[in-house]
Length: 330
Image (cartoon, rainbow, N blue to C red; front, side):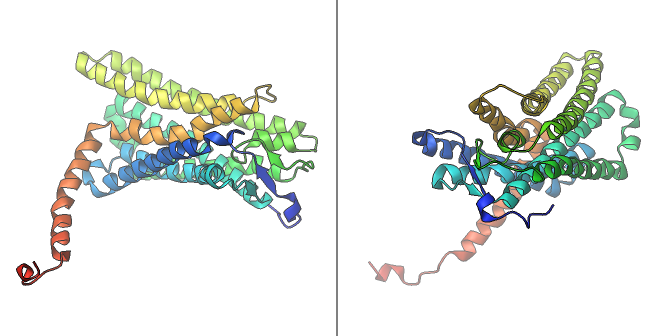
């Protein structure tokens, strides 16, 4: 992508989440807390899986990759949003805007593929348990994860290149809180018909394709679970699948609302509200739904904390200052 012909006069101004400045500080606190929960929650998952040998299975390998992805995904959007709310720092260069767009689309598409991979992993584990160790060996897991990342990056190249070649009008105000596809298309003075149709078809293939395959995996899982004789086993499986499906449908539903449509009459505020779900809320829900509700993860976390606590206490005692003849001071 060539940014050399873009001058400082072509820089954008991001309007932000709301035009009402009175709500900036409360929103800053809320989004900062969600951002910190997202970072800490995902880092805990990565740390626990790495430190506990019993969790180094295909399922937790995929969860670790999802957590790693969520850290970068939310970091692409939220810090700039926080800066806009607190410092009113709304300026962004053309190169910075296109770069943010590229990483946002890359991570968003990669998440679709990872969610599909995780659904496939659970389908094999529950519906074909005898073949699980053979089908989901180390090489296959690495190939699935690498394929998700590479395909996600390749997916992002198309809309990023198309939008980077558009001409933009005198108004440089992006009516959004980050550089997203719809508000950038609205600012363009070029004929955006082919660009809009191309992005629509790509979004349709990626989002609907991934969603349909993911739902097919979960439907097969539900059918297999219904055959379980144990009520407790069925309830546990339905609880887990229900939580996973909630996150999947929330993520895909809001993404489809935004991108799988050639044209929309929805207001800018509605688009911003919907975007908050898949850029801010969902990355914070994933570590809670997929891992921190899991007894194995919680048990491993407790073991790690108990193992590290004596070491931390010993270090603290060594660092305490030694006072001789303290009674003489008083």
